[in-house]
Image 1 (cartoon, rainbow, N blue to C red):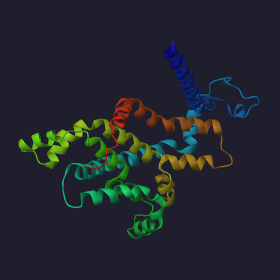
Image 2: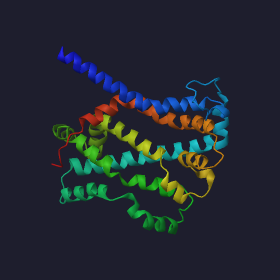
Image 3: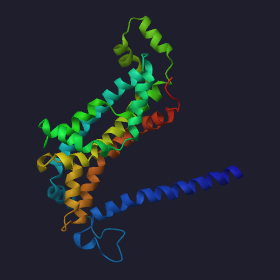
Image 4: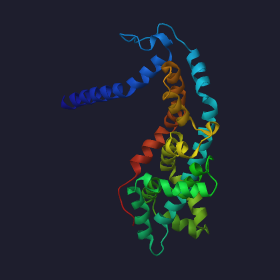
Length: 276
């Protein structure tokens, strides 16, 4: 009886929490389907008087959505590949190999997480402009290929759960470190790799600061910048903006729902052990 009461209480808490999380999405959908005159109606209408599906066409046209969408997709895919590949290589080196100063490098690498990203903003700006990278995607894409401390830490922690006997067996069969990483460690680490991919794609997809700093040409803007630029205008028509914003959220929702099983498995398998 006590157990059933706890289950009911937990269900109520989860229901209230889910409603509070889903309500903004529900309201976005309602606004996106309303006519322009009904957006600020008082009292608010909880159901559109008529479904204005053309809002999605008009909204994307006003924001130049699909050009910015393709820019964001290219940047996000390249950055995700760069961050995952470099973080796996660094994580394997620090987590599975033995060399002098390994723990020191691990501490320095993970310690970089404590530094705010703004600390290198000015020197990096001078560096990239001196290289002629201003108004290009290079300052956004290139840093992704130099590792990510958070992803490296996640990969090290997950790979520490893989017994070292797999390494020994592979090396007995003549596999070198690269073959061992690709054929043994990576397939067994897919849950955390997919988790890293979701986080990396989300961060790159929503990237705003660097594009604002380095990109002057609006044709090169990613979608996050284009959406923010449209929302900052005094003539913003919110039904069109919400319609475009729903499409902006769509790739992340698809990626999360497709990879949610691996996402939960990956985060649940990361232990709290340090570098051994």
